[in-house]
Amino acid sequence: MAEAEAGAMEGKLRRVNSWLKKVFDNQPIPQYEVNAQTIDILCKLEEYSEARDRDIAFLIEDMELKAEEYEADANYLEGLLTEGLGLSLSSLSSEGTAYLNTLVNSAMTLETKDTSLASFFSAINDMSSKLYATDSENKEMELELTDIKKKLTAALVLEKQLEEDLKKTKEHLEVERDKAESRSQNLKFLTDKSEDFRIRIKAAEEQLAATGLDQSLMHQSLVSMSEKLAEMQKEIVLLKKKLKSYLDLTPNPSLVQVKIEEVKRELNAVEAEFARQIDVLTLEMPEPSKHKFT
Image (cartoon, rainbow, N blue to C red; front, side, top):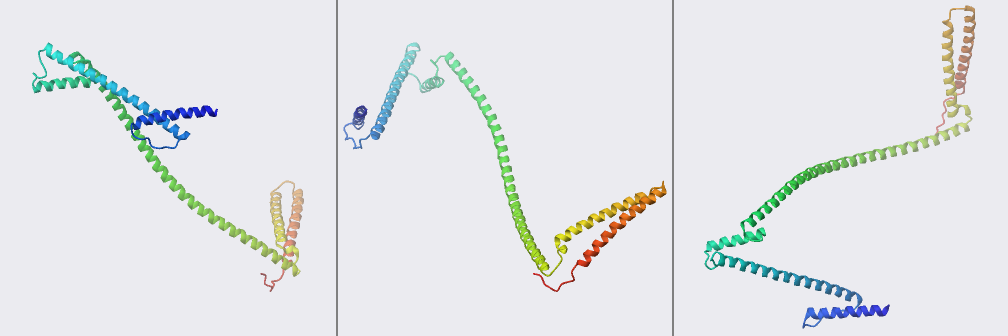
């Protein structure tokens, strides 16, 4: 494997040296570092140079062939003028020479096979067809260009509108962010205050309890008692409605009187209980204390 690589390397080196000698001719070859990478680069340059030389040689050969063809055509035309019309280039006037040059240039421009009228007409028809096709393509391209301009204008307008909407959205978000920050601060303030009040209420309740205050007068007990009183008030309202419905009854007066007395007793009992609860609450309320709570 190593011997094969070494052999390939040596072959590339011989190719490179041969090419460098041809490039620099009699001049000395510049020194270069001999390694695999350098040799590969020089081999590629040698391939590109050889390909370019071949292309140049083909181009020169083609130009020489065309020059020969042009020379043959010129000789042919000169022969026609000389033999057919008895004219020579030296015998033509300057105006005739100008016309002849114009004819030759037109034939070369139209790429006709000769200078006959039929060839000119055929070439002119071909050029007219190409011109018409080119003109049609140009019109189509102009229409497409106009359509593209309209779409581009619409896209630019839309882009501007989107930029304005984006700007407004950012400003709205900034305002909402500030509002949210303010709400968050307010919420934190209220939370802190609520916790502070809870601690202070608990401390006040503990201080009141230490002074011998009845637990039934604490906040939770008062709330529970208030709820019970509210329920009793609802019961009184219902009983009054029930009593009114019995008062509206006309048949069987004795039965109605019994029911009325029964409802009155229930109503009196509820009102008495309600009054008792109010009295208890009033009697158990402590006198204004001179203690200061912190």
